[in-house]
Amino acid sequence: MSLRDLPPVDALAAQVIAPRAVAVAAARAVLAERRAELLAGASDAADLPARARAWAEASGRPSLRRVLNATGVIVHTNLGRAPLAAAARDAVLAVAEGYSNLEWADGERGSRHVHVEPLLRELTGAQAGFAVNNGAGAALLAAAALAGPGKEIVVSRGQLVEIGGGFRVPDVIAQAGARLVEVGTTNRTRLGDYAAALGPDTGAVLRVHRSNFVQLGFVEDVGIESLCELGVPVIDDVGSGALDPIHDEPSVRRSVAAGAALVVFSGDKLLGGPQAGLLVGREAAVEAARRHPLARALRIDKLSLAALEATLRLHRDAPEQVPVPAMLHATDLRARAERLAAAVPGATVIESVARVGGGALPLVELPGPVAVLPDDSLVQPLRRADPPLVGRVEDGRLLLDPRTLTDEETDLAVALLEGAGHL
Ligand SMILES: *Cc1c(COP(=O)(O)O)cnc(C)c1O
Image (tube, rainbow, N blue to C red; front, side, top):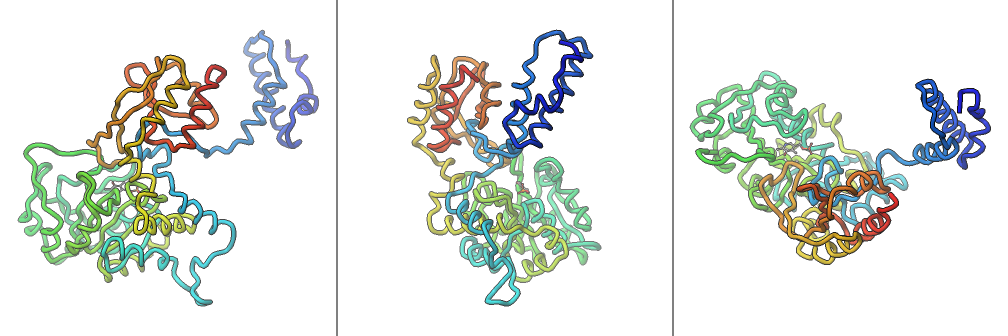
């Protein structure tokens, strides 16, 4: 085949079943690609209509779409962190379908914050609270509201951490306009270190949970109760949003009870809700954050707010229905592991270990049964499947962990695996 033999755009487009604009775009793209191949010396045969149909199909597929997570990593940041509970999904749909009372109270202008504040108060014991766009935003807002320009924020050297790309505690404080005052050492900070650093310009003491790493050995930290007795506002960035203690994760309720001015945490880590950042604490501090100009820049949107309200409601009324904590505690995984294994010749079920992920509980191991495939030959085909199925590779074998799959998703995964020979 030579350049001269390439069909006209219209002729190729006519062989693509799609809206005309898509068919033409597909034909143009495939012809351009083929032209380049021929100029580069290609001499193979090419099924241009098939290519154009594949192009059209791919262009109609959303970029952001469902993935089957069989990695066992529960709060998988790259896979969208927390799957939402059914009630949260329903709430999103109801608000997305039409208009809503987002900022409307009996015909008067209202505040979007009223939809979650009572639940936040109830669940955390705080005097007040509201939600912004994400946890990083909540931390930045807390720092700016309680200590901005001209003020100092006191932080232990052991907590000047990086949580993930672009979120480093010293940078957050600088962005808030405050001056960082470091106290203690990398491994040991005592109450006296904090006390010695307080002065007329102190805006707040900031405590930051280490989230994605731990320090072992000769270490010493100051508890939240002692920090709150220093007599200055305390911002406690607890990270994952565990309402009650889970392993070593700091509990929101404990920090509130200790008297922290603002406790900030993420909506889509252990709380298991939508991407959001929560700020709860003392009335005056919450009000200062709510009125800060950054609050408007970081405000939560209605879909997230709907999902957040529903998730908080479940934490109060039926916590077992929130997927993330449910996966954390799941014990009924064997049947699903066996169904996955039965779909692939030579696959078996072994005991393995899943992780929480998402910068929470870095050392916690979640033992459970997983399907193990004989090798890793299906890794790529399954990644390219629709929906993609992602597992974890250990020792050259593909492991599929049912902990992060629902029953329905297991059905889908089984169907993919049974057809995997054709992928
Ligand atoms: C995850 C985390 C954040 C950021 O929260 P996002 O919701 O991811 O923006 C901030 N601080 C700590 C301690 C965290 O663990």
